[in-house]
Length: 526
Figure (cartoon, rainbow, N blue to C red):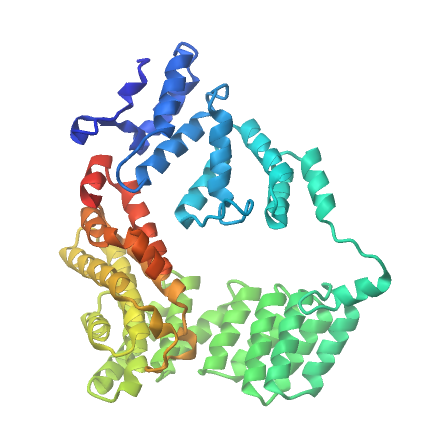
């Protein structure tokens, strides 16, 4: 079989009569093998590449990009292609287009396109890519692009003269010792391990009680003191002796970042947990202990104790979340703490059901905790739905939607064929699509509704989180309807009004395009 149209024969007037094996994952290896065959006429290969890069999909370029990336990957099997330089250059533009190449071609591209282009750079003809980077190094007007291109070029082709020359050009020139001294003392540029700076910062946390000053001193010690015995000893001492709870929490968190494997820190945290039990600071200490001594039994014991004894839905929720992270099968907690925690959380839901709105966060935490330790609990799922539908706090509604997604995912792991799972899955998909449609930017800046400090999320991160959650649970039967519902948000007008919503929708529809046939996607988006 030498005719490339066996893989790709576009019939614009009747897509269902066309051939679109180029978009079917199971055919990719066969297509690449076709390009490697010596008995296939070179002109056939050239024509196939040309057809791929010229493909006008008529549905927002989602399939045009896919065809182009396949052509680029085919160059690894057909490096003599006359179109290779142009293809490698285009890949590079898509990979780094959010940087300014020069004043004439500023452009911001969707992240899925950038991510896929960068991945394809690793799969196409390596020599062409190196040549494209060399050209970029010699032509870009941007120092940022120059540095990134030179570093990538040095990775692809160690010893490349263009990369070495570019990096030498970018190296900062230090004219005298005074200039160097001023540069090294800039905030955030203290050399790692600098003993003078460490001594000064240690003295600060030992003698100054101000929470703010201690916070910044501990932050800087984390940056320059990883594994440093002096820093670790000072943080251990602060944790053990301070009467200020915030300073203690900051010291504990810092130990979790810099004291991996340090026996002094491990012993101190274990002793701390044996003396102090049950509150938030113990949760922080147990997390820090697990970070520096993975598998430590005291961490698991502390988390289970919180489940068994705490009356705080927030604390139970956090303990359950961390237990699931470090012990996904939840074996440690199943026999003991979870039964008590379920009873406590259920009681919180019962007692807060008809109370004031200030209890709403605690109610949300209780429902979240229940779906984590008792997947499918109907009371918890009903509560999340109720908060999602009626809360006056938009961020709380978003978090309830995310928790519903998590609940559905947990149920799905238990029984893929369960009818209840399908119903909950459909419900979660509808809710998340509604969140994308209804989310409004001004809630980020107004204080009309109170927000917990940990929930002050940006407009961008909220929308992108919703999009990510949605793509995780979408099933094939949902894809076409999601495209139909959200496609209008890809218009230029919506991009001007809400670029973040545009990006979130683009991510979702990109996912749908990767999992639908070309004719089905074309029908849904047109």
